[in-house]
Image (cartoon, rainbow, N blue to C red):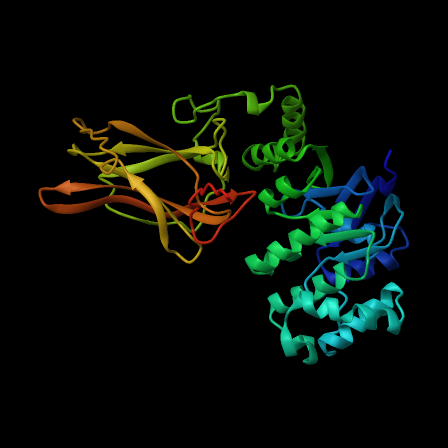
Length: 438
């Protein structure tokens, strides 16, 4: 049986929040012990353990306590309550530039970090070549770190972290600033670490990487641990929470309890384009994170009144898995009689380039609006073949009057899409190659 190398027991972290700086002084001088602060629990009674050789992921939205718990484990913060036990040498990559002196050169920071961990100059000398080779930032190692780009800084920081022979490696979102090739090199190093029996604790918003590399995943929400288990199960649960219950801790707990009693979603063969929408009240779009600054235009002879994004299992979600089916549903109310209207959606990258999309005309799905007030829905079901990453969804309803193209209603960047993938290739879409070596 593998030994426990990280033991977290009933961990809580309380912050006192003051409306004004003067309130802190008033509270300290108050003879009646009057409190001027509000209590905010960044963590509340969190417990888990990590075994030697495991790669454990921690996921959750911003503010769920992920970074706080890593800082407590590494000794950067002290807990308000609870216990953390560590058995092994830790190397941590927490925040961009953490542990670096910005006035020192890259080489000087390598020696500074190594000394802080407990290595002698001779030991660091022996490791220096491997560190510089992994970082691959050339002569910039002789320049002050304050002149580095974020990518160069993380390259050097990660190279130091993984070359000082840690028994436990802790990484907090740091790889998100590296390019795809550097990230691939880092994940190969993760695999090497696992084979060597070392332990990795990883915080990331990249659900594809979490599902691929982690043996177990812990889900946090508003400072509390909601669940832990196999990566696929916890990632699926997280996707449901994102659109249903993250603002309501009690509802989130109930959803976790409900999910524990459900059948394995792998056994379901749901077709989101054919199935009814999940039971819900109000509008579909309430279940998705909408852009408050959506660009909207058109005379609204036809108006988009609702939309939905459904994953393969028919759940509302803007977190989609590569190679799984998903559906975009658009509900349009027609205020005029319109012959052969066109309902469309497009997906853009964060630079604003349209990279995918279709419409009812392209798909030979024609219909007529014969009476004002009619409501029609269009459901587009397809397989997600885009690379893992962030995208933007736009919707539209257009048509022709004679030979003139008419824009009735458009919503640009109405919602963001997150695609998570266990494997990315080059470019925007994956060719889904099958490789044979002979």
